[in-house]
Length: 422
Ligand code: GDP
Ligand code: IMO
Ligand code: MG
Image (cartoon, rainbow, N blue to C red; front, side, top):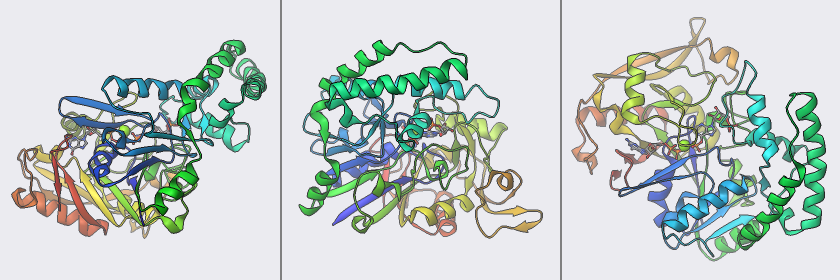
């Protein structure tokens, strides 16, 4: 049995897309378990760059089946655009993409309510993809699911009922014009034909795959610190990117998960608002952003950049159960004279014993740093551990020791070839 959950261990954008693509030639199935088109997973293959939002990053490997689990919220338009884009690159989708009956649909009112909600002063800085409002409806038991596309008359009834309430909300609370009910009904009725071939009983599909000895990789979106339960609430997304979400988001029971693999960026980034203890706001932050191309793959927003935070990573390892990890974007640090690593947090002069997730404390802590020498070399052409400069090895040893997991992949560039396996 081999079911590996791959998680982002920081605030997202760790390079999950690239590493899923690398690992997926060793797996038969890649499954997404949460989030939606807020994710942007980049895969660079030769001169082509693919940014996937909904379809698992395994789709670029022939013979790998891709699953979108019940925990994912699906914008049908974004999904069809992505399918089209992949087909235009000659990638086969039929009989390779399996979408859960029970995944919820993002509706136009979810996107609108997301952007209207963000007009307030204490905004989260969401991606505007309707994620929060869709999960709200799911848990309020008003959501519309993929399976609803199969029954046109019921689908129409559900959309009309929901829109009655949403239009009221739009008019009375947000003073926004109402949405055109008939247009939305017509648009969603039409999705049935396009999406029908992919609709699958995912728990049974995965159960069969496991019974037949297939290897499964679960691709997390976002990152641990954006988890609605374990992240820096309320500056989080509305799902569970941590490894526990893989079970509830697909129907694979926890007893069948055999490994948890973390994707760890060699420094830290965050998009959107919320606390970020090791953030660099000056020249070093600009340098990391420029060297790392740190601009959102979904929204294009500049990412906030800062030093590696071992306190945060230890917390992430604990809640995810990370055993082995890939360190990504090590090449980006190649221009730094000195590199800092946050090894602990202090609050009111005392070292904290654990990572504080309440933002009141997190906004007040002082990060304690250790400073390591930089290697001042371009390592993007290095292909083996032995060839790495001694300062880079020293940095890896230090963060491994601080983090408490084994590093088995080092990524030194966006391409498949820029990968060192240990
Ligand atoms: P994801 O959301 O975790 O899949 O990460 P994103 O795709 O949003 O952001 C990671 C960015 O870094 C993408 O532009 C990748 O092509 C790029 N990338 C991934 N690994 C490396 C690496 O090791 N070095 C460099 N320089 N870029 C990388
Ligand atoms: P990948 O999978 C980085 C952030 C948003 C915002 C917060 C809530 O590419 O790592 P949402 O639209 O989900 O309601 O926004 O979460 N966010 C991400 N940040 N990478 C992502 O995905 C993200 N998905 C959401 O910027 O702060
Ligand atoms: Mg991303």
